[in-house]
Length: 481
Image 1 (cartoon, rainbow, N blue to C red):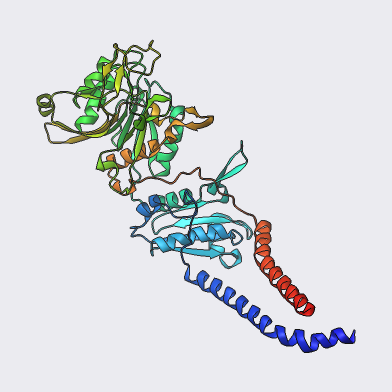
Image 2 (image 1 turned 90 degrees about the vertical axis):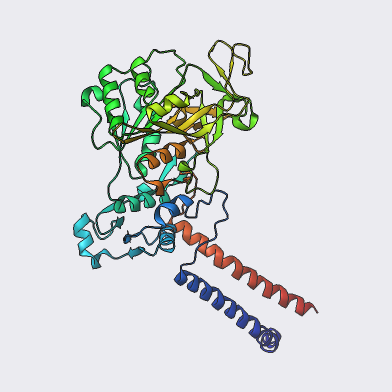
C-alpha cells in the first residue's frame, strides 16, 4: 500500500497534472466555441442529398425580399431544439423576421387570454402587423403509416404561414366542374399544394353559378368527358373577353368525344388538340419502358424566371397542340409562346388497338410537337386574356403508378407539381413565388427529450471515456518500463 501511495505521490500526480490541465483547456475551448456559435446564430452545414435541414431555394425566393415585419413566437417548445434552430434560420434569411421564445406563459397573460392557453400549452404564433396565424406541432409533420417514418413539414408550414400573414390578398383560383373526365378527388393533392402557396381554392359549376365570378383570378379547366353547354360556352367567352386568366389541362380525346361548344371557346385562342396520344422515341425524353410518359424541359422563362436549374414536366398520354396559321392568329389577336415540346422522333397514335410502342404505318409524325404553350389573346377593346395550356390533365392528378416496384403519385413525377403551381403564379401575377419547391416528403427523424439527453450523454461520455482509458493505458505502459 505504501509503495502504491508513493508512486501516486511522486509520479502520477506530477506527470498527469499537465494532462489534466490540457483536458480542462480542451473542455473550456469546446464549451466556449459552442456558446459562441449559439450566440452568433451561424448557419448550419447541411450535407444531406436533399438538403432537408436547410432553407430551400423556394423559401429564399418567397421570403428573402419580404419587407414586412414578422414575428415567430414559439411557446413552451424549448425542448424541441430542432424547431428553434429551424425558426432561427428565417432570421438569417431576412432581418424583418424575428423569433421570440416563450417558455413561461405566466409572464404573458395577454397570450394566454387571446388564445385560451393554459400555462403548459404549446403553440407557434406567426404574425405580422396586419394578421396572424397559429401552428401546432401536429402541423409540422405527418406519418407514412406503411413505413412508420415521420415526414417533416416544418419548412412548408412556417413558410406558408409567413406568406399567409403578409400577402395583401389571396388570389382566388376556381376549378371548373360539371363535365370533367377526372372528378375533383383526383386533383386533391395539387389543390392542397396550390392552397399552401396562399391561394384560395373554390369549385365552379357555371350551370349553378350562372357565370364565372368576378373575383376569379384564375380559372382551371381540366379534360372533359362530354361537351359543355351553350350557356357555359358563352360564359367562358365572356370571361375571356373581360381579360380572364385560364390554366387549361386538356386531354388527347382518346374517347373521340364531339365537343363543338368547347372547341368554339378554344378557337378564340387559335388552337386545337386533335384526337391522338403523343408517344416518345427519344430515350432521353421518356421514362424507361414507358414511351407514353413524355419528359420535356420547360423552355419558357415565364415559368422559370427565378430558377437556377432546369424544370421538367412529365406528360402522360398527352396530345398535340396545333395552332392555326399566322394570318388567322393575327386576326384573332392571338400570340403564343412555346412552353414544352416533344423530341424530333415522337409520333402521334390514333389507333389505340396497336400495342407496339414503336411507330407503325398507321401513326403520324409528331416530332417537336407543342405540348405546352402560353397564349395571349387581345380583344377588340384591348383587353388581354392569358391562357397556359398543357395537352394533358393526367400529369396533375394524384393517380398512383408503379415504377420499378415503387408506387408514387403522377403529380409528383419530375416537376409536375411545380409546373402547375408556377403556371398559376404567373397568371395571378405572383412571379415572386415561381420556384422549384423542396420535396415535402423528405423524411427526417425527430428526437424527443429523452433521446436528446441520450445523444448528448454519448457526445460527452464517449470522448471522456476515451481520454480516461488513454491515461490508464499510458500509466500501465510506463510502469512496465
